[in-house]
Length: 200
Length: 200
Image (cartoon, rainbow over all chains, first blue to last red; front, side, top):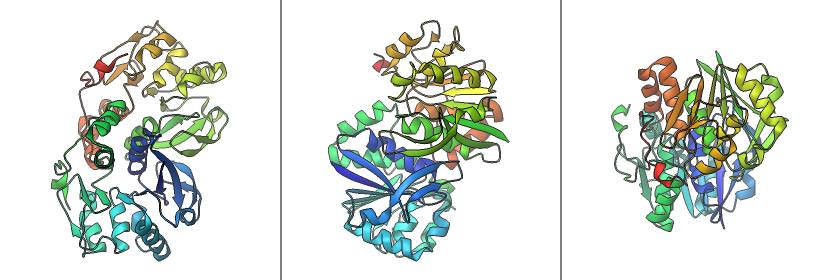
C-alpha cells in the first residue's frame, strides 16, 4: 500500500486537491490517502470547504506520494518559514512529490527543485518564477517530470498530471482505465498546453 | 448572492462534489457554497476525505442551486426514506437542482423527475434506471437539462454540466472564461458522450 499525504492550508484551491485525490482514490488497492496541515484540525477555503486534517508532523519521515496543491493561500504560505522547512523535510524523504498549480511555488521555496524542470498556473506564472529563479521554469507544459518531482499547470492540469503519474508507475493501460472509469477525457501529452498564451 | 447547497453522505464520490464546487466557487461574486448532510457533522468517504457539514434542516426552504452528488454511498441512500423525503422537500423548493453521476438515482427516488429527461454514470446506468423507471432516462448524453433539473453523466461530466449551467444562466462567454481560468478543456456539447458505450 502506498501512502499519499495531501498538504492543506487555508485557501487551498479546491480542485487542485480533489482532482488528483479522485484519481489516486480510484486505485484504493494501491493508494491510501491522508490529509495534513501545519497544525492539524479543520482547514477551510473560500469555496466553503472545511476539511479535517492531521498534523504534518505525522508524516515527517515522508510518504510515497506527497501532494502539494496551490491556491490563493500560497501567497501567504511562501513566507511561512516553518511550513517551508517542514515541506523540505517531508518532500526530501518522500518517494514522489506532486505539485498542482501554484503549489510549485511552495516546493520551489524549499530549494529542492533548483535547476530542475517545473511549471505552474499560467495566470500566476511570473509570481511563481519570482519566488525562486533558480528553478528551470517551463512556460509551456501541461505538466513536467524531473527526477521524482511532478509539477502541473493550473487547477485542472493536476488531473492530467496525476493520470500521467499513474501511467509512469503502473503503465498507460491502467491510467487510461482510471480516466475511463471517471469519464474523463484525459489529455495524455504533457507538452500540449492550450493555456500557456495567458502567461502573465 | 445565490446560495448553493451541496448534499454530502457517507461515501460520496470526491470529484462529483468538488468539480462543480470549484466551478461555482470561481464565481464567488454570484455563488456562496454550503455543505449539508442529513444530521450535520463530519462526513467521510473512501478517499480519506472528512468534510464538516451542517444539517439539511437548515436549507429546508430550498436554495438557489441544490447539488446532489453520486458515489457508492447512493446504493445505501436510495433506501433511506427520511433522506429522500428531505431531498424531495428541498429540491421542490430550490430554483435549480443539479445531480452528478448516480446522484440522479437519489433525485429520481423523490418522484420529482418522473417523465423528465435525466442521465447518469454509464457504468451504473441499469442500476440507476431500476430505481425509478418512470424517468425519461437518456443513455447517451454528457448531461441533460429538463425544466430546472440538470443531471450529468459520470464523475468528470459534472464539471462540463456545471459550466453548461453557468452558460445557460450567465451566457457562454462567462462559462468559457471560468473554464479558461481553471485551465479546463470544457466539453461544451451536452449531447456528445464518449463514454456511453460502456453502458452496462
